[in-house]
Image 1 (tube, helix red, strand yellow):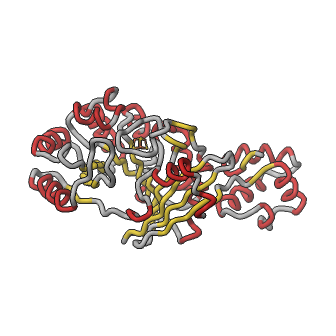
Image 2 (cartoon, rainbow, N blue to C red):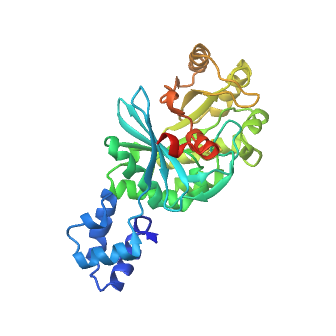
Image 3 (tube, rainbow, N blue to C red):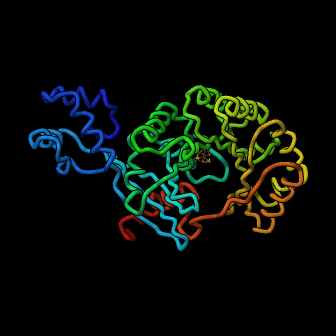
Length: 341
Ligand code: SF4
């Protein structure tokens, strides 16, 4: 059966018109769906309508298949979608509020070297409703005030659904542009397109190296879009949105942590209003190994000395398979869902 959370208001109007209902009932239904309640609990809809809906449709919510809580308060959810696919989202406690990291695809086709989400390629796109269902599910452990599109998937590879999701966050969930960040591996046409959307969310650019030859070893997408083109797109995004760009730099021991890397970053980021987030690689992946905490702070200090704004990102949820895609992958490989849930 079709899940109604994934439908927009005009599609809901059409369905309800088929049941002989007035247009305004679609707005009531949508408001209930955003609250995450069952058809039965939608008390301002007639009993007859509620029965018709439950006979022909589902609400479209994801089910919590597994929940892991970290010592630091981070909660990781493994969610089961209506077709049985599994996705992850992570709720994190920050000083400025509770932040939910959402997935935008099942799997990912970008193939970044250190990422568990991309290991099996893209399974399918998530609908805007399925992304909303991550938020609805995660609210069970507390209100969410910020959203980062930084979980499994490349948001700009699922462009229309992601933009619909962001618009819905802003208009239906009261989460404004200052509270939404979108992370991309650098899909240049998508960045230019997003700049024209008038939604002005914070753009986070996963750079990881400003040296093309190194970046190609980490991110296949950089064979199509070299560093200079990605930075030009980020500059265009800043010009349109006025939002400072966040540069994500996963620090890898003895790979991208040298003076040549700092010099390349300084050159590449010149003229871009940005802040560099230094993120320690959180687990060994092939030939890549994690840096120490001291290395991360020393690298950020050197960036600052070179005139770049930089901080080390606090690692949250490291005791609960915090990196994106790890939990889903372990569950898929070992079928541990039933034993441990
Ligand atoms: S890091 Fe992001 S873009 Fe790269 S494979 Fe993983 S999910 Fe995809």
